[in-house]
Image (cartoon, rainbow, N blue to C red; front, side, top):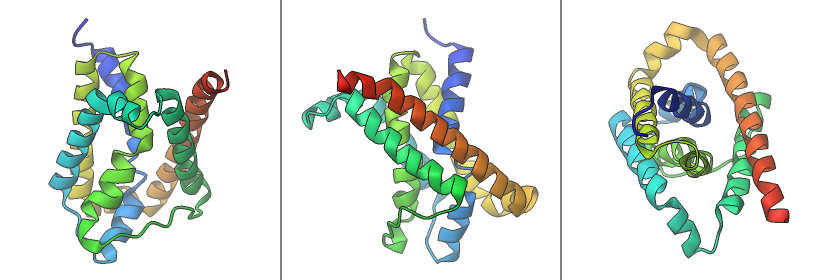
Length: 192
């Protein structure tokens, strides 16, 4: 089938909601204010490489650990639910603190951008979309990530803290909805 504009847009929007870099702006600002070094190009390139690699090798990697796609999807749904819950209700459940010099990789690349949610989504998308359209959607999203990280201060001033707060809540609800759908569509296979 090849290139398909509708598939590209659809895959882009799904990944955009899961990656939720705009909803992560408060986290990015907080990391920066704590002295963490955030390198926009490094984050974008590493994220794209991880996501594209997982697109091709994900199922094989899972099989090495004797984990099927449905189990991974349920686990990813739970992680997504927790992040969505945090964003929507403003609570902190995940308290993973790493060294300041790796902030570009942890927590930005993993688990925020190339986390269980986006990886599970990529596996699911392979059944619905052509690979080339998914790759284009990944590259569009990681390019968007680059610009948000590069211009986070200007973006913050442009939309203001109230809009950032609202975006975080909206994308939190979207993540919860995606997690519920992902959970429901895969748990029945595991139970049977």
